[in-house]
Image (cartoon, rainbow, N blue to C red; front, side, top):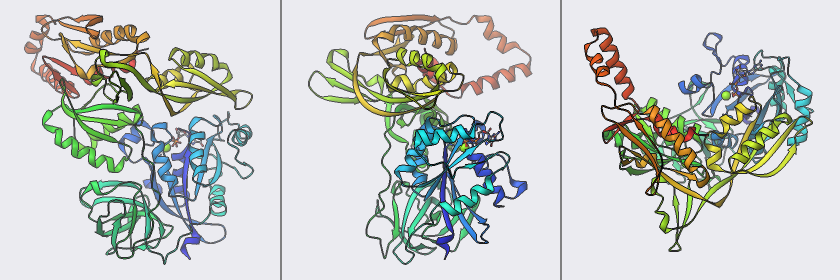
Length: 598
Ligand code: GDP
Ligand code: MG
């Protein structure tokens, strides 16, 4: 029967170790995608993924593998992202599988997200096949990489497969290994329908499209289904699989990974992690679902055009279907008007959300300076959570402020340990321990304030180790720190969306840098604009943006018509991601200036 011929697996690895390229080769070898339709990283189908060369979303495909034993096996392969901000996508993918391919780049060895992702797979009791990739490269060290996998992770590598995802070498052997080692799904086809929603997306015509893994039962068009979490019921209009284009099917059965549509228009009724069952013969217990993600950073999202507030709300609700880790609630800013305070898993996630909202929903947005969540103990004995720096109460009412700390693990070659430790120390890190991975690399563990790690730590780490360091972190606890709120004043007016929280020791230095940055970013006006940074009523840094000279403007108006049109066009484009605050136009970069200080 079909279940015995099914294999469900995810591909996990550190970023750039070759997951998406391996998925390409598998699709090619199994003739899932015709040669003429083939392109690199074909599953990275979002423009944003292709432009940046990274996987952001999980992608599930069905394919048929004609094995050496003469049997046709049905594979459901899920490609996953490697960046720490998107580990939620990985954990959801793994819950739909019986096995995982752990891809490790033989020139790089075990890296921070190799560990983080393999632990997720181990927690889910998946069968793990170690895959040593990039063995075509002269610098590849497959034996050393295997030893690392054994020593650091504790996985047996006697059955590891050595491949080149680029050339295709070894991939055929890997496919056989998948058949042999990854268990077939065990579900009861006769039992009531029980399916896990591991992803979803909103389609203007079909409503919500649910990505599901069936554990028990069968589902087909016309069936009445119930989403167990919300209790809402629908009639199934279509079921199918992605291969990688959507293919309609007459039914899906236990063990299958595919999609269901049911004219679900009310997007608030669906949630990733929910269980789908038969409305007339419901299963007794829902599947465990997913744990809620705790956002690491918060930022305000504002439409550049205030009239687009409702459009932004609708866009956020629809995007949340496809990005369950996104959180938002309305907020308002004196400077920016009405918008939403959003929670993200990291800065890359924040950047991706802003881009997706703009591209997929045609909005123009401003994101404000990101911030972590502070726990503030007040003198009256109460404690509040502050996600927006401008809402930090007056110093006179504060007893103490606690900030989130993370356990950061940094894998780095011996030669760079000194540089890494210095960087961590400079950012208020506290050394915890150091573990040797092999004779040339160590895993350095620090307790660090989350704010110091989120704001440009990673880029600095990469550049000071020539790209050899990898970083993973997890929230550990809240600790009291000596923190102050710094306000930024433009033309004498406080711009609430530019306020930030800083350690007292860094406040003056950072303020001077930010004020200087803003001077370079905010366009000149026909009057002078003072920029000031202040703690309470005390100014700690200041500079002026000079007024532009008269002749500069007149040139715009007298130039030849072609040139004038170009200038106007340029100005119009420049308007994008710009917000008028009082008499001053503030471009998007200004809100990010706080991130780029040393
Ligand atoms: P992912 O982030 O794990 O999905 O990695 P990608 O599949 O996007 O690959 C990252 C980079 O490594 C791309 O430039 C690939 O062309 C390259 N790459 C992947 N596999 C191999 C391989 O086997 N050999 C070589 N030389 N390069 C590879
Ligand atoms: Mg990828």
